[in-house]
Image (tube, rainbow, N blue to C red; front, top):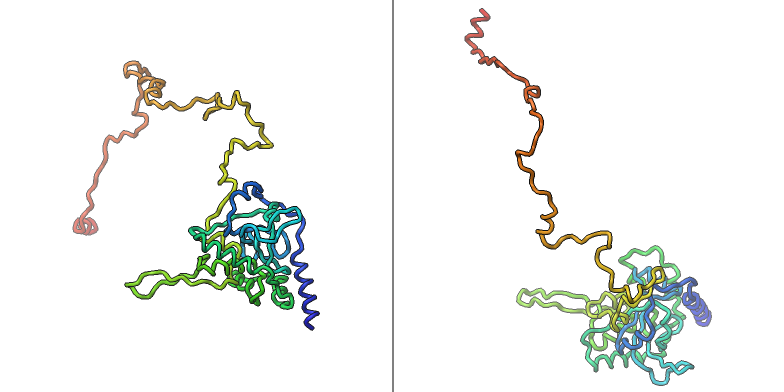
Length: 321
């Protein structure tokens, strides 16, 4: 029975890991810029293109479906071309493995850097992840796999639990769980629960570490304790150096002749007196001529207006008698 479940689990894992054709990243980072910016301890978020990536993006309502931890060169792990493995990640069907940085060059990625993390704690985080290499996913746990085949419809308040349900050590079906455990080893917060002390004299916040299985890739993006690092901006971004396909770059001899206003329009005067000089002077009253206007034809002349006082009740009775 165990062999049958293991085989079924591998088939489901292979189906979920299959890439979906037609993926086009928004703006992949420049490989050289990415290599020069990323540091050990940084979390790389990835917009995946396999079946499980689409499901995770739906459940998390986020662009990011995968997360990997940059730890620097891993001893003894290199590609055939000599490129070292520098990322630690957890994939469905594979477990915890290492990977080269070039693996995600074609993808839309984001770097999230922990702020203020000391060198010793940074080393501890990286060492924790490296020591987990080889932890495999238990394909016999079919519940862990089948829940990703039917993600619709799920209320929003249950989506985070939907990802974590049925998972357990050493299962690492969600990549962010491994990274969350690594930062938990040095008590570095990601999105902790916050409660306030009940006493008025002790108004302080108490942080509680969440369950690592409840973390999602997007949590590193929205965390107030992680800084978003964009390689293009860090290396210096010059928008004038861009070459647009629909507009020819201006020649050097005329590049400095463009003004704020087109040549057909004049800039508004900055000196108030300059604007007043263009305004026509006031015309004297004696120069104004015209025919006299007879206003009598426009009004009703009331020569006599009869006013009657209201009669009193006594006079009214005498007249009636």
